[in-house]
Image (cartoon, rainbow, N blue to C red):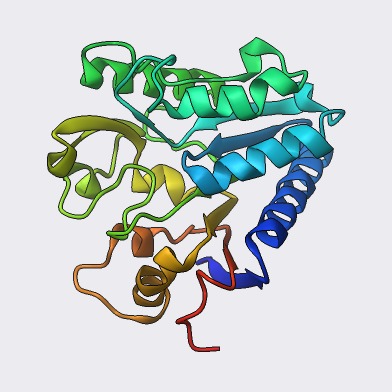
Length: 246
């Protein structure tokens, strides 16, 4: 069945981070109770960083040994680079909780060959989820953000990866940055049991109005995230939601 979209608006950014942390832990507890583990793909950016710091501070005693962390996208840089999503997550969360190193699946983005790095990460997903050749993984939760151009993960408007229907992970050439980004594809995003978008700040208000209220042809990448059998939740603060009709 198609996804049902929910929009939750919190008064402040701090309220958003706390609500997102509760949503994350609630989803984790539910998944662990149902099948013994919680598989989640993380996103980069300042809003998720605040969430990860809060998780580390308030839930450091959680059953992190049952949590398996992946990355929905990554910059084509080594894990020590300031631009690395992995580095941000490592500094804000991983170094502050007791999670086995084998439960963290980072993109091998230090490989100079971005296509090979994407293929390697896809192979990791296929092994972990024990996928048949035509299958896609079903993550318990995927966290996403939204860029000023309506992109999500590293699926940018007019970029080659928008049309990918069979691969799980691709090296997507992003012309405006003159670089590859390694990213999950839409089939992976849309097979998730839950997708949660996080957006904070007045600078997101115009784009959120377009994404959530306008019919755009072709659709913006973030509009194309529609889980085929899962939940779609947008979590915003008041500043980000200021231009929505409510």
